[in-house]
Length: 539
Image 1 (cartoon, rainbow, N blue to C red):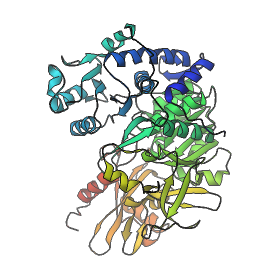
Image 2 (image 1 turned 90 degrees about the horizontal axis):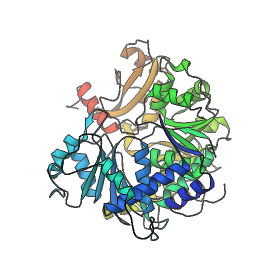
Image 3 (image 1 turned 45 degrees about the horizontal axis):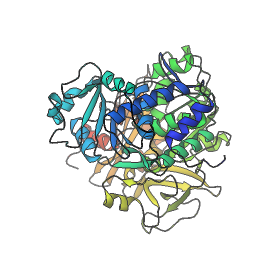
Image 4 (image 1 turned 90 degrees about the vertical axis):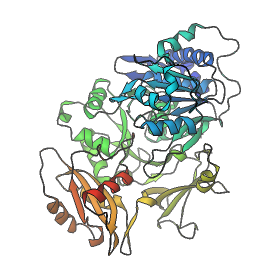
């Protein structure tokens, strides 16, 4: 595609709203916005932000499910050069406190309740001044809290009050003339699957360019209808859903949170042509008992899933143009994506071309030397997609980005001679059984081929003789029953001995063990649970 021009988010939105005012931009159930209506709503919220003393470079946090308000506030903050700090709605009180303090948040927008979580109770615990008047000594930079909902403490503002500011008169332009494409647009806190969250600083150009390039790869274009309930507080929702739709002039159909039947119903009702998700999300939809009741018109999309699940998505959901993607928050987020016209054998097996004008190399994890095609090592990235750094964490930033600009991803991958990249696993997820390295994805992919298995997750657990051995958690398909030894015996026929799960447990859901908001299993929590379940504390 033609190189994406460096621009700010406000410029990109204004260009689409001016050229295509009547095209639908956002659909949330009964709420619909054309690009013109979206721009009007954004401009009104800009006035509200200015009335609350938000200026270029200030940090505003948003803690709520996907909604028109989330998108509008994000665009409004960008319009005046403020930085959005998305808050994971699964955070507990201490995690919320850490996020607000670490990110130097000046203004917080928060739902009173979401997914049965009482956020006001959490705020009262960590910010007692909300009962009277801000700021609180524990979070001195937080000047205002705006609550969406009915439970509004005395020290906070109702969202309706914020909206009333839109009629106020302001001096000068609504938009900041000081905002540049390389300014920070969003501070993404890492999901915390392996470590404590860090604030990844992503620029306007990081996110818009990434969105434009990936939307071209999975053939998202003007007037297409793209269903994605990926959470906006994650880059899969902000960059790869909201901004992918904007840069391609498509309509984003979304929902407050992902529910498999709601997703199927929305895609059917809205005649969606595109969708995206990971293996967990696709399996939940395809294995839903009412799946066959919905007539889908999907043609294209992208997935973070293995070959077995990808093949099912193509066959059962009709997404013939399904693409594979690999990325991480620090790369804003995608590093590579297959092209919708690539040979299917490459697409379903995770081989994807690196994004335009981005340097990618594979290096030996011990020596740090670059490796030739066909050899696996750490994936490293250099170029326009790399974050500006971790906010207020210079040492961690220096560890992540080399002096000559290479981002160390901590992921294992391999490249072929045609510049295709394949993600293998996270380096921290790899475990050693005796002297053999085992990547969980290798075992999970085999387990998913068992006719009774719907989902599978594998981790390494302690062993006195071999240091670590594989342990697996699986969810069975609806209506199926099995004994754990039956699955283990079956896997012995498919896997090398050192890869066969020593321990296996059949469960109903991973939610009780721990998932990130982007529906990724938290391997660290899974391993901790396995040590309890399999009585391995003394190993």
